[in-house]
Length: 119
Image (tube, rainbow, N blue to C red; front, side, top):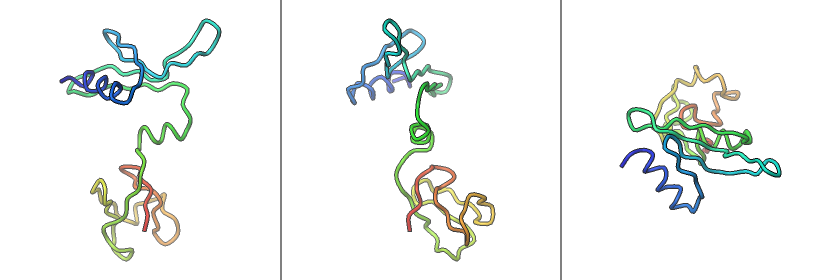
């Protein structure tokens, strides 16, 4: 199964209408005028079983959810440890290098998977 076939099957599974061109799969149609409209999402297959994905007319929250994911995670190390290790993606980061951490090394979001860190 190609990446394009997998994408189309996942869209079908979710009941999402899509247009299947020879080069691209388009979905998320939005009427923008009386006689015009756009597809908000487009994907075409590139080498290695990956997709090139384009998004148009999305909110900042949608962009974050699409690229960094949603959900929560926690550190598998205690607060006094020298690094943060994500319970979901397994990546570790030295607490001193986390420029986005709050005071005292508290981390709100994993820099790799984007999930919200909970205690």
